[in-house]
Image (cartoon, rainbow, N blue to C red; front, top):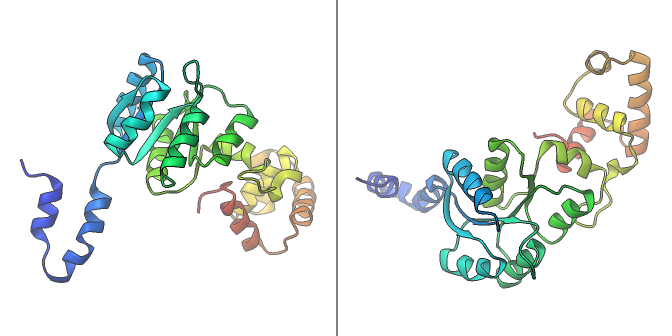
Length: 238
């Protein structure tokens, strides 16, 4: 049985070989160290990740196991529970990992989703936060984004985070109402005022007024600026 790695290497010739290492790195399955003190949760998450083509290379059931297992297994991503055992929290574990390896890629998975907790996960340097009741595809997305060193926001959390400070920055969207935030997303996706009115079951006049208020609050004039700003703050995916 020839692994995809050897197969890819075997076919390379000439200058293709230069990018071979990069190609192999991309083709290689993502590896995850899973850390949660509930066996049933670990099993469920591991099954879900394996189905998405992600290899769970280790499972830590106690906070103090995570550091040594990370050193030994060098996984692409660590998937951490927030509430961990008696002495240490997931935050302590993450802080220790990042102190030892600045490039550690951490995703938090928790049933607790208060604003302050979510904000703290990103502030300490984690790349994603997902709810334990998230879709399998969202969990896989979060892990794959983290492997590439990219921040990931679950769609429903992105809306809330856009109105909070993330990583210590006041976001421009903090001053918007919930309705304005929803209209902002649709405008950023290129919908017209008439289309938004229909989508949101609002009058054209209400949407037009909201649109003016949004542009004023955000200090922008051109639609493209709005799209770029919304993408930068993970309100929409480009």
